[in-house]
Length: 279
Image 1 (cartoon, helix red, strand yellow):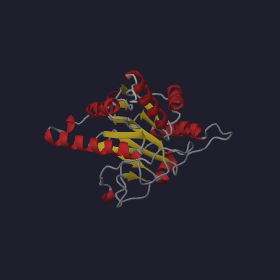
Image 2 (cartoon, one colour):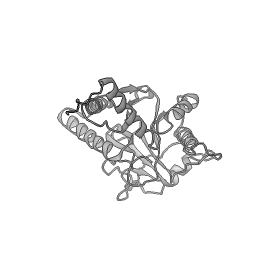
Image 3 (tube, helix red, strand yellow):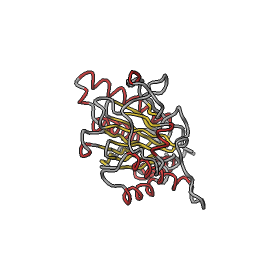
Image 4 (cartoon, one colour):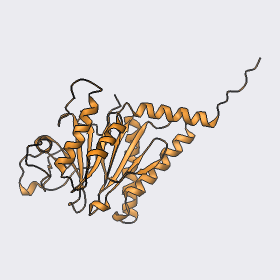
């Protein structure tokens, strides 16, 4: 006796795929992207020093993601190739966050509708402008939906609670120190998972980067070490980053706060990327 062919309605298939993607993305450690007076800040809960949730894509464009590492790392690499090819073929100014977001949306949407399993990723693409009004932050979900988020966005675990906190406390014209303190506080609040005592996330548990509005070309800079610790300390007078970069081998344009000479203050390194699997 032959069995009847298996059938599921398109609505049920799409619903199952969406539930699967949302459930796994929610397991990822959160990321917050928010504007401040001097640019755009990215703050992620990430204890890995080599696998990053936040990456440089092009001159003034950066990328943040949560979800499954191998899937969004492929998207990051594809974004770098897209930006390099477009900038080389036309002009560097033709590489924009909006164009990159549209390219990612097409890929995510095609996989969601035609492949058995959707990509378990959520992305943020940001571009810093010459003024705060020119900043752009786009959020892309697993099904290819694109949202222009304006001034801030949160992704991953407890994204709704972090977004609510940003809506309540974020304001235009914040200093970098204020923006990082707000993001770290919200991520710490949700990291405790309802514990009686709030888990305080410090520089060792956070991955932080910025798009610096004042830089003429490559705006992406990672923050780490004593400088990040000072920026996260409320009573410290440090409110912004210095105008020099850490160019030691392997630092990839990271500002640590260590003393340097003027001759060492040149930007080097290639874009980084990646994120550990959600936990």
